[in-house]
Image (cartoon, rainbow, N blue to C red; front, side, top):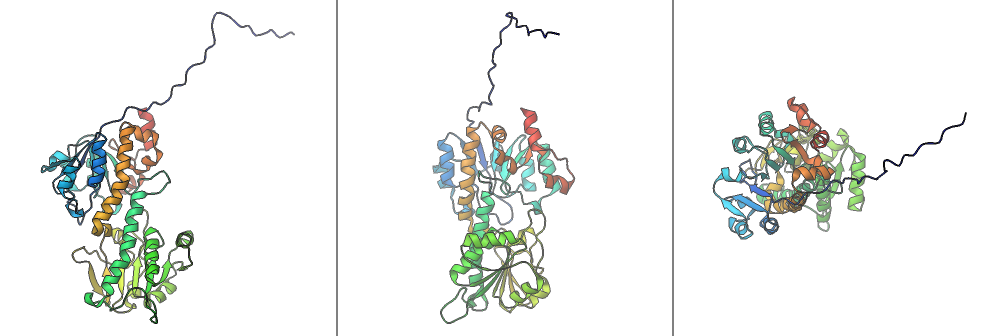
Length: 404
């Protein structure tokens, strides 16, 4: 049977359709509010006067609560010269559509929050309370956390900077408390000719551990690093460009090294929840009298069994004749440097949010930004928080797609 040829009719024409592309909206003018932090020991401010100057010259408005930069030695005068509006009314700052805080949202802030506000701040998983999350959900807040904010290279820039500051400060703190003037052992941290070097044990080979190791080696100390992640230990040696004494966390080896060290640093932490306790009270009791423990992981409970929370005003206590320094949020003690580091990340981010036409638009284009958002228009998009408080979890990617 002969197959019939296809019939082509001339009554309709074939035409290619234009592809519709996602067009970026026009840049948005941002109204940014910076309140003065009332949280425990928070001296940092998230934008420096220089950063405010750049934002204002790009057409954005910045409102600052009176003395918000005082803890970082940035006076109101510098902010007003940069073009910020200074207000004595806390409620006025909270009326801004974008709030930038250097401490997490606290209960005193809740009544002041506006509907559909955008909040950029740290989150501090361990100190988070259910009622704060619920109230933010009620007010349809979009919240971005410092800890989870990723950059183009897949790193967490603010966490990295804060960890570098903490790591850099550790040897300064240790040196200070080993001196006779602070009732320390009277030992110089490091080494001089003819005298065995000071021994430093670092538990945790993350960024804090790495920077602390670098500084201790530079002073001439003998450093021993422990971590259960062998890849991290390898990375630490590669980054330092030299061989360092390393070990996995084996209690007998750790105990032996702690017995003879002058400085012990706890820099182990979990991504969420409590830091693992790896040094028992027994191990601490066996340490040399006058030696010092600095527990950086105290923000998450600490990794020494004997650690107890202290403050910048009363930073140390004695236990088993060992000095314990357990101040949370060490970068806040170096507030000016920490503020500049945070500002260097947030100022370009805010300019980018404006160029993209607002945060909602930028979230659509920028996958790294999605990592940092834990609440989107009142929907909780952080799985860990939803599990912790038994609250409804919503996938951010689905939320964004459904709004298109």
